[in-house]
Length: 350
Image (cartoon, rainbow, N blue to C red; front, top):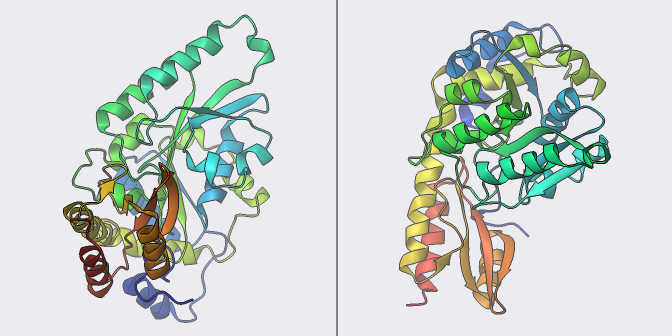
């Protein structure tokens, strides 16, 4: 069934018109293969400038699960595990990609989708001090996402605390930025790409959910630690022959700050919709400052909202209510937003 005004996800429409225009303008020009083209070089330079990481390296691949698995395979040894929160994307929505590589996932309780530095430190200390340590997987990497699966954000202070813990135990810190654009553009955000370069071992800048046809940029702030990444990318079947298709999209996104301008608009729409849900008497599962919002509705209304707008069933709340995930996209239109405002107001609880 076709949904007239979809709020299902942020990747169901092709790409921002400027990207499509730039692709068309390339016509039948020939480029070097496998990301060795001038477009990819220019895009990588712009990304490193934005990250204030002149000594860094950028690798472009087409998918989020793909890049997460790649980086884990690159840095985590066979006897090591990856630590994330229970709601972490690699633990809930990647079909066991990390486990398929032979690495255990250790999940910790989340605080509104975020990993707490004190909880992480307790876990790492308990592993380090255990008399049975040789019988356990060694923590090799800490995985978080910005924004989180609940649309919440790590503050700079929280990220700095996590980085301190990771460094004190000599464990890497990796940030999945599949929706990074919405995080960077949020009014609640105080974490920059430069902060991520300073505090993490690696992070991704997502394009697939932020206005591109496809594409994720893996940023390693210190290229000296990048090793044979290109060879590993090839071994994973992820070295795109037409790599310039990725290069031109990131070039378009970072040339005139398109990446954050379109995601900022999505966040503003989400904020207005949150206010409408609350004004209509609906509770929000969590206060999200980005493009994903989580209203809680009576079951019948939730089912109607799911059918009408294609929103995603998130989790039951008690026996008579259901939380749904409403995703505002970079491509959401004024008409889409108006239709949802009208539905919410017409089904107000008060």
